[in-house]
Length: 122
Image 1 (cartoon, rainbow, N blue to C red):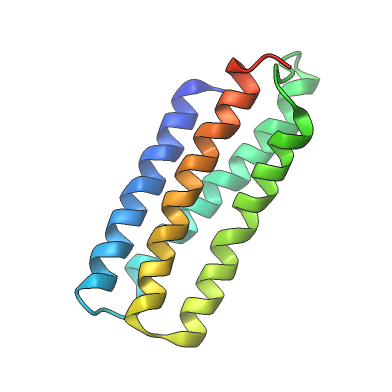
Image 2 (cartoon, rainbow, N blue to C red):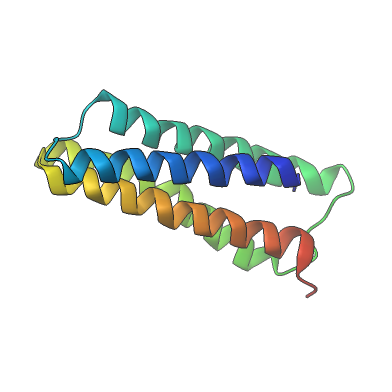
């Protein structure tokens, strides 16, 4: 995995989380900003999925557990759409807060995936 891409993902996820948490705590329902920020996190996760498929073929296999890496990646890929759909169904301020919490969880998952790929020895 590319280190700068990992830090970009973590930064975007944290900023999206802060945006969603602030909007939720001031009483805003899910809007284009909160859903768009969550969508950006999802787009970066899809890019990471492509990198995770191509990197071993290019001679950059993970140093840690591949099943653990893919469990984190699949979990991270599933969370934003589920949270977004729930936020659109509920349409209350707490669903915006949930979007923020999901983005924070993804930031932690992305950093853990980087550790598994580049730093951890199996």
